[in-house]
Length: 125
Image (cartoon, rainbow, N blue to C red; front, side, top):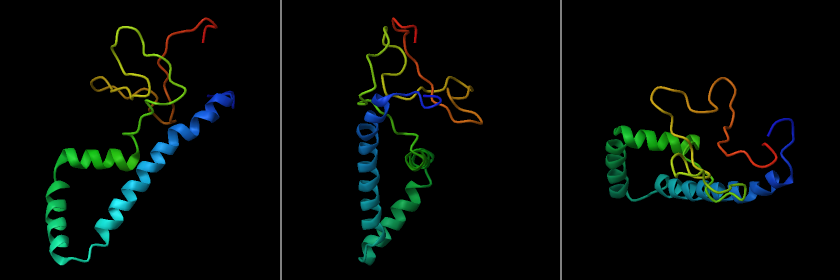
């Protein structure tokens, strides 16, 4: 969408897409609150030991960073999604594109953009 030309259907998708993300954020906040307010010293010690070990692992660090920055979020159930492209290669509707090799992800750079991968329709768009 550029220049406010997205149409009403774009606004209608907001609740379906971001509502699920909001639910995830609230569940994560609830879990973190429970962990952060533990009063049992034995459980706190176990939590600290396991947490220290786990956060020393690179895959855990990356998963945590992806979660906090919300780059792990996709919209596979968005009402805006159409059918997948023919052939089955590439991302499914609502999935992120995995960068190839050392290339930057589509839409990255100095100005955040979203890339749309779709077949042309009868109107040429």
